[in-house]
Image 1: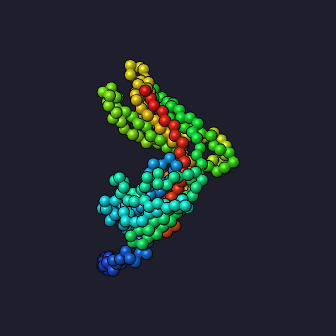
Image 2 (image 1 turned 90 degrees about the vertical axis):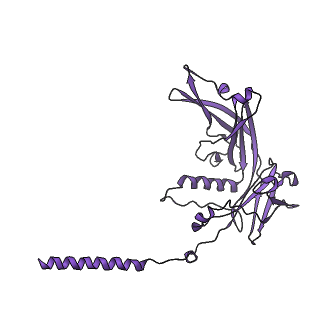
Image 3 (image 1 turned 180 degrees about the horizontal axis):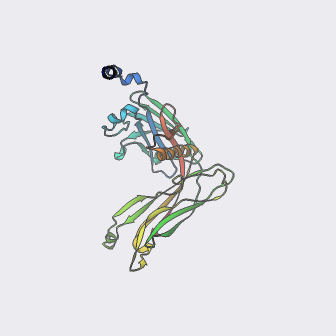
Length: 310
C-alpha cells in the first residue's frame, strides 16, 4: 500500500515543478522587436470631367498594434501637406479645409478634366513623406435606360427597384461602376409646400455591387442588378401604387466608365469585405497605383439619368 502512495507523491511534486517553471516562459516583448512597419501615407483621389470640385484625401494607415491607439484619435486625416495636380501644361495646388471640407480640394474651374488626358498628383507631407500617381480619364459610355419594376413577396408586400441598361462599345476594354441616389420627399411636407427630403444611396444587388467589366461580353448590352427603393403593403386587399407611396421622389442613376486602376481597387475592396471576420479566409491585398504611399488615384467619366416621380 505504501508504493502507490509514494508514486502519487512523486507525480504531484513533478506537476508542481512544471507549473513553477511556466512562470519563466513569460517574457515581456517590446513592440519594436516585432518588426512591424510604421504607418504609411494613404492617398485617395478620383477625377472626372463632371466634377465641380477636385478633391484628394490623405490619411495614415493603421498598424497591427495601432488600432487601439488610433481609435482614440478624432480622425486619421493628414492635414499638413503640399498637394499639387498637373495636366502636363499647368499645375494647381489643392488646399486642405477649403469650405469646411476635410480633404484637399480646388474648384474644378481651375483645371479642366478632359477625356483622354493624363493627370499627375504629387504629395509632400510636413514630415517629408512623398507620393506621386497618375491617371488617364476614360471615354464616357451613355446609359440606355433606367427602369422601375417590382416584385411581390409573401403575397402582401410589393418591393420596387430600378435597373440600368447600357450598350458596351465594341473593340475596347471597358470597366464600369453603377451608382445612384434615391431622394425621398416627406409627403406631408410636400403638401405643406416644403421640401424636406432624405437621400438614400442605391445599392445594386449584382455579384460585384454595380462593378462590371466587359471581359467575354465585348459589345454586349449590359443590365445592372436591382437597386431596391422600398416596399408597399396591401391595404384593403389592394397594393398602394408606387407614385402614391413615393410621391415627389427623385431617382438618379449614374454609369461611371472607370479606368482599370479604379476597377482593380474596388474589386479588391469588395472581396475583402466578403471575407471580413472569417479567420480562415485568404487575405486580400488591396492594389495601389501610388508610388511612395498606399491608395488609389483614378479617373472616370459619368453618364446620368434622372427620374422624377410626381
